[in-house]
Amino acid sequence: NAGVTQTPKFRVLKTGQSMTLLCAQDMNHEYMYWYRQDPGMGLRLIHYSVGEGTTAKGEVPDGYNVSRLKKQNFLLGLESAAPSQTSVYFCASSTSSRQGMNTEAFFGQGTRLTVV
Amino acid sequence: QQQVKQSPQSLIVQKGGISIINCAYENTAFDYFPWYQQFPGKGPALLIAIRPDVSEKKEGRFTISFNKSAKQFSLHIMDSQPGDSATYFCAASIFGTDKLIFGTGTRLQVFP
Image (cartoon, rainbow over all chains, first blue to last red):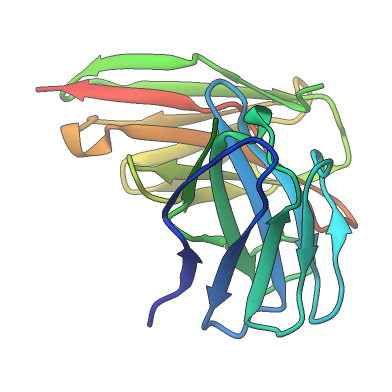
């Protein structure tokens, strides 16, 4: 049982380049989330999805787009990367529409992205 | 604006000691308070969680204390071990939404 798998694990981009981060979960979870983790700022929610074909904005959505074409996959896109998007990105999935309500969010191992 | 304030940012404890991490919140709509543990190079993982209808929850060496009137909750790690060295995040869930709000994290180091 792989849980939540993120691809790639590391990436270096030049300013203005685009890329897509892939998240895949094999737990049949309805809900999926993208967070970014920065020193001293904890985990901040970028976008999330409560089901196939649906997405919603989190706390820091600017500069990112997402898609949930299949239940098991959640893609995070950067159309024009900026140095401020240098961060560690985590994908998570859970079973409940209320992520923290008597349920557990399962996280991937993260993608370390550097924008130069 | 940080909705969940966590302190300290870092903590050094000797083996066998007690580690205490504190969190405070403002939004009274929060009704679920989990703690996540993160080891270097890994994603966070749920450690323990509490609802506001109880003042304390204990699981092994880990205890959450919750003070609803003060809007504060804390994690106590008894008999701290080097294997507990990790970053700890408190979090809160907003009723009726799908978002989990995290604190800024505490890096715990337990020395032998």
